[in-house]
Length: 161
Length: 291
Image 1 (spheres, helix red, strand yellow):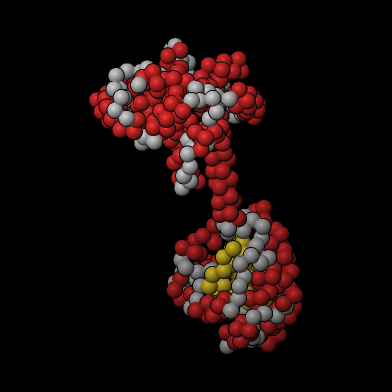
Image 2 (cartoon, helix red, strand yellow):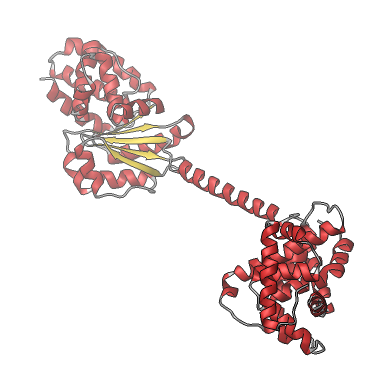
């Protein structure tokens, strides 16, 4: 069990990241809260030491993504369809960003993961492969197809570069 | 596009309230999990507990269903009750077709052995066998600790039934060898005694004889050789009675008299559970075997 200080520090440091992952996986804030707490509970009870901050971050990413997927897999969630999370976002987000987020959210799950990890977190295909447990080449094709789909949704001026 | 995605996502931030809620949640979880460091440990503990309960439950049930002592009821129908350590009937077995017929109408399992003996002896199908010519023998085979109590109770019971009812005790080892030979303890015990006098008697013959027939044969041999087995308490009593009767009849008195006194002495040291009536009728039917 990790110390309270360590856990609180992790919550401060990675809360936004976990929130983003929950945001593009889950449908609403209530679900997000559940998963959010579970992720940090796992962190608290995970006893192996991390080699460094990067390792810790990658570990949390993987745990958060898996937690979201598990949550969606559960019976009660399977049959509910809603896209409320966007509506719940703060009003100050401009129309532009809203459009981008909507486009990303509409992608299939595996593309969303790759796109988020690459474009936001800035991981390379090789690193994404390690986090998601996929081959590097599959990540490349996920990224290029994801980019293709985004381009279609958002218009031609999206170079993806 | 990179920047736009990045910018867009950077507006997605965790609610400070959510952060605080999570910290509180983790703090309470920490307290609760202090006993079991991880959920896995808790699950393992629960599983082990459940297994233990199951094993103890099954083991305990089997233990309570294990017969540790036997009471056999023999006339010609041969019935044997297996008692568990709480002296309740766990098995009721018939060793011949007549016995099966009697057991068919009865449910004895779970009953106290005294009740079970009662309901066997008083059942309607049993009635035709309870005649003056037949002998009802209750044989108790138990381990030392239980032997005394069951024996005394059964002896008391046989006294109450009165006529033709004897109680005999046997070793628990006799019971297991009796079952190996497909006989009830009572009959097997009688066979063992008979075979001491008459090595020509086979198990099969004994199986098809009624207790009064076996005891009749025993009587004959008893007279012939004048030896008495310690376990044949009631027969000894019957012997002396019989011998005296013969004596007064003036029949074969010359031989009978000295042997009968020997029998009488034996009887004095033993726990004779048959009453005068039993002895009297014993004499009566034995006389039929000694024309």
